[in-house]
Length: 515
Image 1 (cartoon, rainbow, N blue to C red):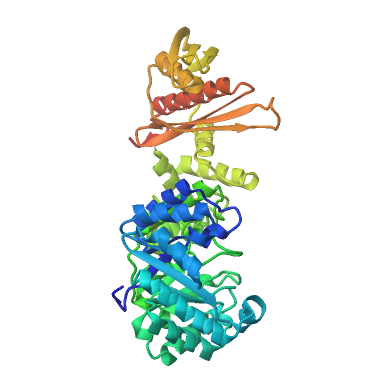
Image 2 (spheres, rainbow, N blue to C red; image 1 turned 90 degrees about the horizontal axis):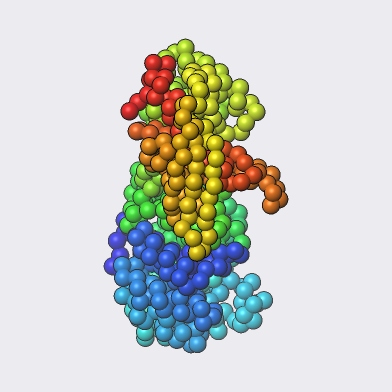
């Protein structure tokens, strides 16, 4: 690997160290899916797994190695012949394969785990690198538990493995023990005392046991390291690893401080994070930096006012830079009139001062008893405070036939004004057929943006509550319906949304609608 002193290489170990975290195990197809996205993200090295661990891990690494072309593919191996041979068999089909071999360097591990002397371990480290080098020029070595190792012994080991052919030497904070100042000093110490250190790239691999993984990695970078080993969403053993998205965006946002760059396509960060949560079923906490649900959400009235006037006032990066569509202004008891007015404009409503005062007062009252204020809550407030009217459409009758040997068919009667209209609809399923029948009767065809079903209470006889969102020009309306039969609830919700649209159309003089 040609060295660029201003470039930081991103080594992603989500598929190896990340997968070792409880609950994050993935099958081969899931690993391939994530590996493809990591390649689109632009990571430099994908550590695809630990081939000796199992046949499944071996097969997954082998398939990833064959398919991935732009990123390097690494296989992990302990410092012994069996592991290294197995790793090479798994990754040899890669466009740019890397063997990553490791052995402990701390006296704690040598005494209690390996039960070997420093001299023995040093010889094994060198032998492992030489064996790996016989397979590929791209060899990485890690002295495990480096931050609790004797510094001078660590210097000897790093120097020896570089002489043996290691092109990358990783300095792991295996148990998350270091603090940033300490970790930075360790990297600086190696640069000052390892004579051949410029012949390799120095990497960081930090765990988050004290919540300092990202800070430690950045401290290492400031002191000369040029590769960060990390995972998507910071998953990994125990408290996790350095979060890729946090380290990368720190380097990008603070270029004034670091003066460094990565090749990460940052607009793929959120998509990659979401893919991992979809594969594993484990979501990130809402306040997670960069990719959490609240990372670009604002409720404070002061913050909202500043953001509306100029986003840089309270956002140090744009949501679009990490692949999120836009800032989310959360309406609540801390929101001011300006934020409420701005949100209503985004929904498609332009209110005068008197109307806005009424709506803002209702929002404040509702926020005292309800945690989150949604668009449908605003729609309801507008309906009650600004416009009222008779429903144009009323459900009279619904009958649905469906099953695995029948074409889903819905027969329906709806009262449209003073007239009862009966028609049928066909669809891919009973709900689709129901909505088709409604569209046939009402002669409408608004895009369906959202369809959500929730049980109001527990048990198999629970009443179903359905939410339907329809798009109308540049804004949307939300309808709700509840009934023990979820199909009836769905029909009621859709019809409720249509009635709200009729309210809007017939009350343009009361509320200006942006089209």
